[in-house]
Amino acid sequence: MSSPLPGRLARLIRQDVQSMHAYAVQDARGLVKLDAMENPHRLPTQLQEELGRRLGALPLNRYPGPRMDDLREALARHAQLPPGYALMLGNGSDELISLIAMACDVPGASILAPLPGFVMYAMSAQLQGLKFISVDLTPDFELDERAMLAAIEQHRPSIIYLAYPNNPTAKLWDDAVIERIVQAAPGLVVIDEAYQPFSSRSYIDRLARHEHVLLMRTLSKFGLAGVRIGYLMGRRALLAEIDKVRPPYNISVLNAETALFALEHEDVFQAHARELRAQRQVLIERLQALPGVRVWPSDANMVLVRVPDAPAAFEGMKARGVLVKNVSKMHPLLANCLRLTVGTADENAQMLAALQACL
Ligand code: PMP
Image (cartoon, rainbow, N blue to C red; front, side, top):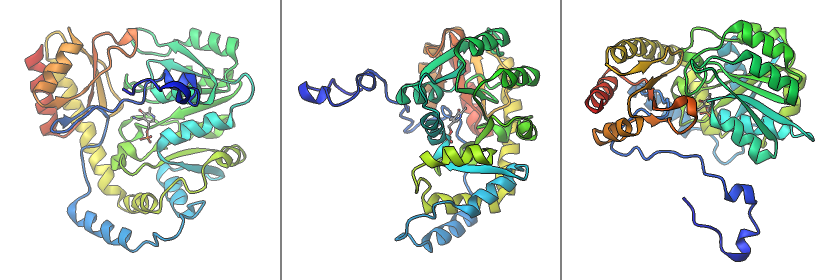
């Protein structure tokens, strides 16, 4: 936490920024890291060496190409983007979320998203000076359709975010409800499929139905969180406008080459995702067997649980060497909830043992 700015410096920084909290990242040194939905699998050694050679041969003295056509085409193939649609790159989806807010910052614009949800939607609104409107999920973490439609009617939001599946609840939304929200939306609807590698459904086949829907994905959960590649897909004309606010060289040549390399070896990453989906099933079954633990279904690489005392369980697990995320203060609906990232079989076993010891 930073100390208050003294005297004249305090006048230089926006008041709302001074009262904000920085995006919190927990210190995971020495701990089994199951707090941030990272993929536990690294590239096999042989591929690491091959990638090292590829990166070493890059012209690092030159700026990256401004459009990154090769990478955008490879991602479009990977996502099975319908022909005629465009794809824009961001330094992680986090950057795309900021760029969308920047491009939509017209007078009176607002962003609407259900809560609990991913914090960057609200943060992008605040930083861009847009109003953020939230609608609570139902106690079982479904979309509250009536409240969503009423909020759309009342506030006419410029952007609606629907994370599909949602973070931290790990659930997919009812497709008929999404359709009615999309139809009622006066502005953009961004379907955020960050967790698509672990999900049983995708919006990609429905993208062609509506000109105001954008689909956002990332390579982070696929196994490249350190590489920072997010991508936004939608109508060409619309993305051409949003692309104008993108910093010209936002994707480094190292990131782009690594992403291309990964897509050439997509089968390795798909195998890791399959393994994590299988581990998720095992983890859920073992969690369900723990007395006093409520477990929600998951279409992502995380599992939300409610325990009798989340702060105590979080600290107890940390003391036993396992870091998870205590989300219980994020929203009243998440009282006593922990968000557990799905790791390897061994990591999950350590997490379960640590949780069990704290119940
Ligand atoms: N969307 C959702 C729903 C997320 O949970 C996250 C991060 N966990 C992101 C986007 C950000 O992804 P990236 O690493 O691509 O910035």
